[in-house]
Amino acid sequence: MEIQKDVNRSYDLTRRWNMCLVVTDGSAVLGLGDIGPEAGMPVMEGKCVLFKAFGDVDAFPLCIKSHDVDEIVNTIYLISGSFGGVNLEDISAPRCFEIEKKLKEKCDIPIFHDDQHGTAVITLAGLLNALKLVGKKIDEIKVVTSGAGAAGIAIIRLLLRMGVRNVVMTDRIGAIYKGRDGLNPIKEEMAEITNRSCEKGTLEEVIRGADVFIGVSGPGTLTRGMVQTMAKDAIVFACANPTPEIFPDDAKAGGAAVVSTGRSDFPNQINNVLAFPGIFRGALDVRASDINDDMKAAAAYALADLVSEEELRADYILPAAFDPRVKDAVAKAVAEAARKSGVARK
Image 1: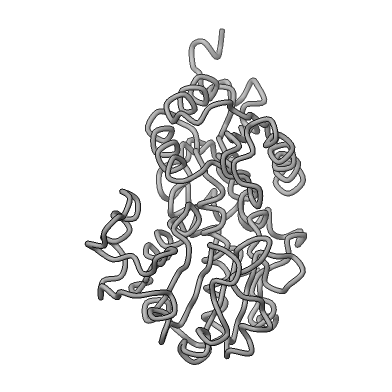
Image 2 (image 1 turned 135 degrees about the vertical axis):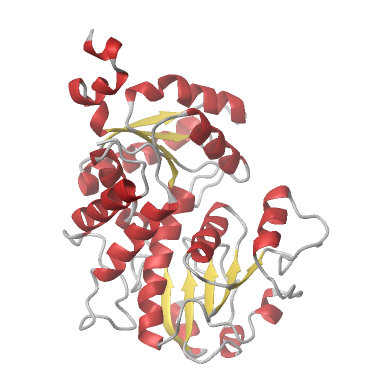
């Protein structure tokens, strides 16, 4: 009867306070593509294990047998009262953007698409420390990105929010700019907020003079010769998995000062496990109604700060995934940001 009178009591009287739903339709599983919901289940189960091991969050996998946006949204909404948050996973673009947007409008719990925002948080954390190393300011750099999918778009949005002014986004054709023929609605939106100089041409052409390259595209996209045309002390984040846009040795041979990849067998791994467990831990601890940009930025700064000035070097810009400090540092920062931004309910 207590919960009937006040549904928020469900957080106190049930396990809802610590429950996260991990959802996919199996349409964009990392390295595998559209393999379907059943084949996506082992990946979601693995994600749930990571939630528990690294964030002490109880996660439940759900694989939905539909690619229809409204069916997926309604399915998640109808069971959302059993959970404190929802993690969207491995859903193809551009549907992932629409699904997240609609769920945020309907639900009063955090909706977090990790492929977008987890990657963006870790990228920002790594970039903050890389910029310290090379002595450049975030509002003065030129950033060129490769890949116009979920991760690439979220990274750019967060970087712009944090003060980056000059970003050129590229896809398979080349630079995305206002007025380019054949852009889908998401790319049109990105053209409005990036590439203010309206640079045109291929990646090879627009990367000249860039301070930072961030790749979330495919293998071999960036060459040693391209890196050689970048600015002095260039930063290269080649995050494609399992084969990066360029291997670290080639990037360094081209003159890159700091190189990061998505792989664990190279230094400076961009690994989402550094972000999502602590982000959800912090959000759940304060019963947040959303995970907003302030909370994502707080997570990134908390991660960056775990690497001390004395420890910071070209091959160590991010803490290790198994660093025991990560969860508490990220959770504390996220919870504090939730309170300051008005989305905490506890």
